Image (tube, rainbow, N blue to C red; front, side, top):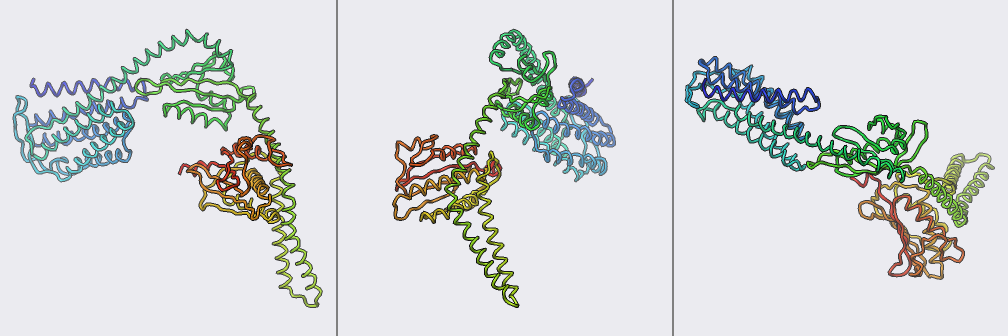
Length: 615
């Protein structure tokens, strides 16, 4: 037997052996699709090697042309399987580029059977016998097929796809895989393609030996899959040791967590198994021997909280982090409990997640106490709004008296017109239209008072800051005129929306504006209160109310937001604490400071809507 036959036969046997092993692995584990694709690549390489032997021992041009034509089929399969393996194993590669490789290589395969004797030669005119590895083999000469460029383009795109996937894996941190798989496959593919092109274009007189380089690709792919299998075996042994340690400490752990009313659970991501302490099972309503699955646990979480918990767990696994969550739990008997959970993910030396450890405890009583506190805050806020209405009463009466007086005068004028024998109906219609507008104006003022008097909790909605500040200033402007205080307003253009309760924010603004007017009604010649709204960085909007008064003494400034602390002779000391409660409930902050030129300024911030802030 010749040396060539021995080498190519051994190469084919090795490929078929590797293909059989990995095909068996895929049969045992259908999720191991990379092993299936590898088997296809190995079988295709063996078939290509057979076609190469066929061409080297061909005696006629017809036999050589037939072998070259059928070699295109395993070559096409090798290209497709390489794309699939790189995409599955490296988890990288642009899909559109992969489909382009598939399309161009498939087009080249079709042209191979449709145009000329094959895609390389329109016609093989004769065979040349040349020495190779101590033997004499055949190489073809003839008329080149111009469609050969399509096949060559497909090979170039294949190299580009693999290189791009390798770069993506490198940037992601999988540098060993990027080098061994991406780098090696690109190298052997370029060498195999280059050798074939040199032979096909007649630059080098040699037989086609691309299967030798394809075998290098197969060897690299097989090594990587074997390495993963070995790593999985080592990980399995580590998990067995870990389980033994867990069993030894389980009783001590149960004793500790039962005393602290905590429940612990551990999720094995490799084996897809969940272990939990007895206290955790009792907390979630599972029996001691009942098997645990993630989906059955999630189904006991309230439907409104379930997707949030699922997302937090997935994000912790993907982003190498921990998670914290508070959610409602519905037990089998229908009871609802509030649960607080936090945990972290454990990773192996290669950065793959293997375990999730979590701690859970019942916070139902704490939530109930928090709700009672919030209800009390709402009651205090309501009392504050009602007391503030006493200050607004005179201003509202003044503002309502104007449209009511206009309605009376228009009604008297209409009565005079109707006393005529031929009244002017157009004039009467105009008078009635004026009466309607004045009535709507008075109703709008009353609606504002009703909104402030309503007792309700925070109802956050998208709010335009400029419109809110403008409406509030309009509400107190009549009182400012009565006090002879100049009320200035400055709003930055294009302020983004905030998520807020409109009525509560109006309460805060009115409180601050009245405090400012009280501060300047102390004999100043030109009392002034200024309201501004502007951006505070990229995540918040700042609203400020400043005055030209005497400012706040330094020793009182630190206590200005304390409950029942007041600088007014008849003040209750609740306006500013209530305002701080409202602003903090919105996720903002409020503070006071003295102006350099005299007077004080109160500022508070409001977070911008999430979808606006992330743009």
